[in-house]
Image (cartoon, rainbow over all chains, first blue to last red; front, top):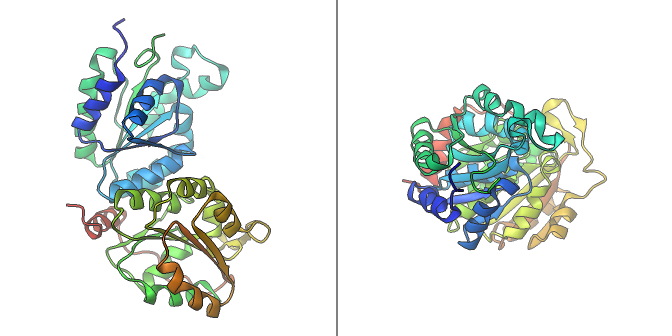
Length: 166
Length: 186
């Protein structure tokens, strides 16, 4: 297993790829990422994941290219916003979604969503990748290009061990 | 005062505000009365008008943003009142048309007759929050509200009833594109 992805380099890559608006709801698996965004004054936390998606939609219409950070539990909260706002209205964004319940090894509240996460993204036709540590930076560029080409949300799924050592 | 009466007071007084309309009768009734490229109409994602307005206001601080919301929408996403108050965008105005009901699904009652939404906004920390219950009071309040430093909240108590007008005719992706044009995005 390669070492964890450094949050500062990941944020640099997000900015270089054109992302310039950051919101979300935290998860421990992206703790270092949110800390780095906050250190740079780039992050504004939201109350719920669907509210974060609403804010991101407004920001997109104001010219920003948004990133929404969330735990996969929050993807459940977000499905209506994704379906009837972002996908319907062709509003691209990057979802950085943690994968709690990965391989069935987690607290019980995460197991159902953890088991279906990739299939749920497939059902909503949201392009997604769960990068290995050494592919994370390249997949930021993939996500930016895919969001731009499709004008839809795309997702990077954060496995345990990507930002935080297991 | 019905929703139509209230909109007939509000819309003629507007200038170049970018406008986010909540889903349901508010979007339909407003679209038939005054529509331009700076108007965004939600046809789903209930509850998120205020959050969308917040994101737009933060992204475009030089533009005034007006959210035309309803009591059912505010109650579905009350956390947005807190987020807006905390972010405190001076360019965000929040109108709430309160008929005490989910009008577009048949008039089922909400709880806004027992929970004063303008008090929630005030307590959250909006710079100002007020309530009007007659068309005369709305007409008197609007100049100050529309010129206010935000975030400002105005609850307009309205009666259930009146025809909303036809569905919004614009394709969703066209509404996104035209609001971006109106906001001066490339």
